[in-house]
Length: 170
Image 1 (cartoon, rainbow, N blue to C red):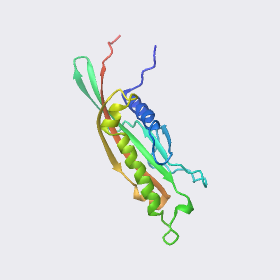
Image 2 (cartoon, one colour):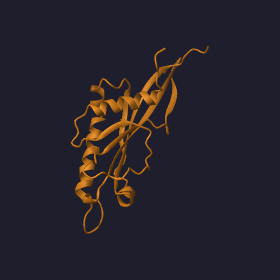
Image 3 (tube, one colour):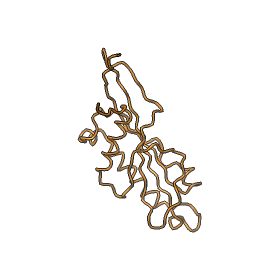
Image 4 (cartoon, one colour):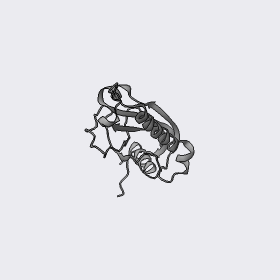
């Protein structure tokens, strides 16, 4: 019997594959995870500090409704967590804060990911067999993370719709 994933996992896998195919200004590590927003990234290794993009199918608000007789409609929100732990060389010498240039660079990456997840670009993708509903920036950046963790964190949410047949009861 073939493996069938839940709609939320299918959506997250599709977004991950789609993002891996994109050309972004920075070269982030991209993977599907169950990352924790509040998780502190490990200390940066000097010179080896790429941004991370974690694509998470988090079921925090998945709407399931009747689509038609024998079918359910799933609205699947997929969170995209974009993070980078900064090194001391990335701090302003006077203030000790992460420099604006470094935050600006990460903000550009957020914009590129939003554009990659736009309705037009998703429609052109062959990795996602669902209907695009919306894409929004939930937060960018999380200022508390910049200040306390010296880490850029942004959260994007892309929502898809899919209809699934209800299996016959055995």
